[in-house]
Length: 201
Image 1 (spheres, rainbow, N blue to C red):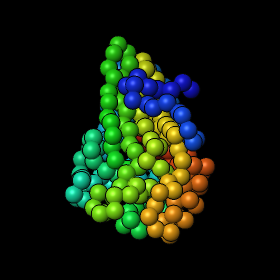
Image 2: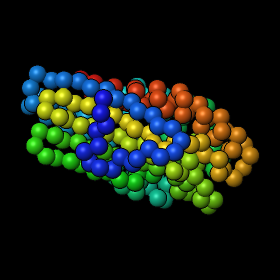
Image 3: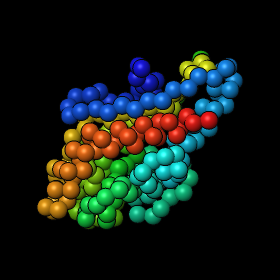
Image 4: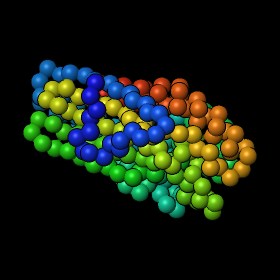
């Protein structure tokens, strides 16, 4: 499938590796597809309930003060990610990303929304080091797109490299192991589950 980058926020792949997961469904008519697009868009922004779509990791929106946030994702908020297995000390046992961009496209018979995150520091930790198994040069971009009567959910991880900048030795070892597994297995399986869940009728 081609990339769904109608919003223009998907970065170019320049280093490391990339991961792509996509799921597509086709409706009998444009009206049904348009109605379901609105549902899928709400699912995309409802990050706190992604685990109910079949993911093993649990995501929680967090503000800059470390408080849990209900409702939809928005720029500047963080995802606190509880993945199976050990977390980082600096991340208080979690992996962290921050919402960099949310953009929408609406023209003719096409509707699209994209949400992009980047590995970040734990907002409540004084160290300020990236607390994710990917480096802070990596991005994940989540999209839902309607083209006529076709609906597609896609996740694009770009410029993925393991995070080697952790301050403590245990965190360095953890990121090296989990980062490699994440690049080859975990992220791909999680994003495939998310893509299917976003467009599941």
